[in-house]
Image (cartoon, rainbow, N blue to C red; front, top):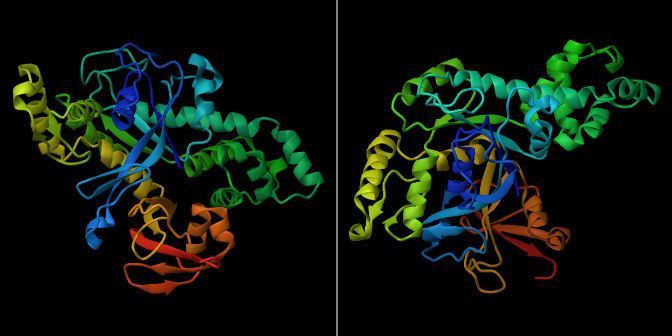
Length: 400
């Protein structure tokens, strides 16, 4: 399962985002450093379920399905707030940055309303410039990468020369804990034109290498939280203009949490990511709740099309990491061995093959792969066939 990390300075709404996404109970408070250790939970990305295409009702083993919308689990971690100097341990920053090491992607949550300063302390809306927060976090994580790259670099470079090692293999081995692969190391070296031997690489070379490796192994998108605060929209337009190369999505974690809690109590019907909800028990809503729901409807859903949270998760997985969804089934009836219909929806990297899918299902299925069947098109596909988004695939083994 992929690993998504929520990062940012204190008090920008990371824990609220995390709770709204996972419904895991975490402490939420305006004071800085409310979160003292990282929390893990399961969030969900959304795709159209294929059950309607076959006129059946799916029975998911993991995740869930609502009105033809399939929600597929992903791992989410809430990283405690980072501050300037985190890369050298300030505010227990090294510990928190260490939690990021295994992340596949970072969601940088910022307070787009500008109502928290650089320390995470509450200030008047629009009095702090959230664009500074974007630069700050990138710098801190780049410097953290640099500290790891530089650790024992001289000895490392001499060993590479003395043993005539392949530099991309050596770097990948040295930085495997940060998910640096040989392919990523080679891309970075080519991009920076580091044609001379590592022992001759300068401080500037290492700084640039660290930054490139960070971008490739820990790509980052921005969740512009608290978009419902008056004046926040102005800051969001500034953000898009200042950082056109970084994907930024407006969101309101507080609104999403309120809608999910109301849906959990069966007061409303709400599908995450949708632009509307239906009140089910108006007589059980007090005036404060009615006003709150009306505010969300007018200032968030109608204005931005959704709370933005589901879009953040979906774009992180499908657009940013280039994953696709595939439905493996045990037979042409779309069932598994226990008779469950369309029980699984897997997330796999774009470009993965039918054989890759077989191994993801189970080692033995991969080892005994014979062929696969594209259920929708009713054709046989080979082991090298690249799986497409939303395909339904049956794997045949020599034991069937």
